[in-house]
Amino acid sequence: MDGNGRWAKERGLPRIAGHREGAESVRAVLKACVEFGVKYLTVYAFSTENWRRPQEEVDFLMELFSATIDRELDELMAEGVKLNFLGRLARFSPEIQAKMKKAADKTAENKRITVSVMLNYGGRAEIVDALRQMTNDKLANEQINEENISKYLYTCGIPDPDLLIRTANEMRVSNFLLWQIAYAEIYVTPVYWPDFRREQLKEAIEDYQKRVRKFGQTEEQIKNAG
Ligand code: FPP
Image 1 (spheres, protein in one colour):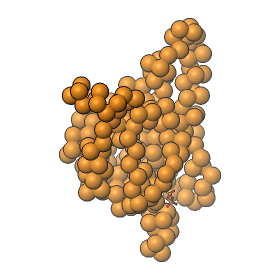
Image 2 (cartoon, protein in one colour):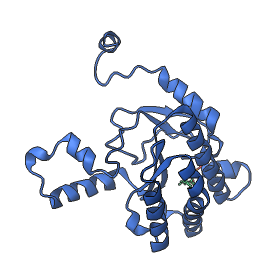
Image 3 (spheres, helix red, strand yellow):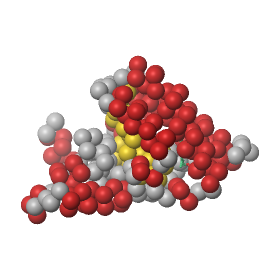
Image 4 (cartoon, protein in one colour):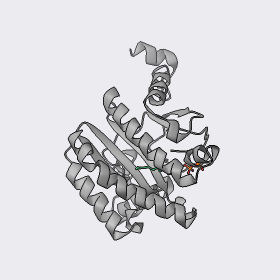
């Protein structure tokens, strides 16, 4: 969700104003996903590197995550949204951890859309955690395969993303879902995250629909397979 800071700067506002508006985009994009029939939405809200930001900004983001859960939980529940919080969550305050757990537990049976909020998340950290757990579980050599690695990631049970959207013209993967995006289509837009709403999502999906996904095969093979 890049470009919150730049969005604010262009308006002569503090960076936190960009994050506040960015939270409104999360709301709008989620609503549009429900409308368009998207079943999984995964948002990169806070990376393992984001702790290095000014303390004031980190504190604001923590408060924003916490307040957003409080404010939105009833509506998310009513809309059938299943919420996941994925990442190294132990680093968050006990209060925020409890709030995340409560929201995840409450929405666990919801089926309309699964929203995963990635927090203190890093793709490499996720792979390290998966390998540690596989070692703890004493998996045999032949059990080390792609299917099992996927199962040990935080995203266990969530299909690999079809579409990866990068806002604010960022041409980097930035340690996001490194394993899971192997075949994802990447869409880069100059739009800053706070301006990314229903229309911008629609454009991204329409662009995605024009792509031919080959998964290593030729275009002819894909077409013949129908
Ligand atoms: C990146 O833009 C954005 C973040 C690190 C924070 C994202 C958080 C939100 C959008 C808040 C709402 C989220 C939820 C789940 C309620 P940036 O600050 O790096 O912007 P810049 O690249 O322009 O400086």
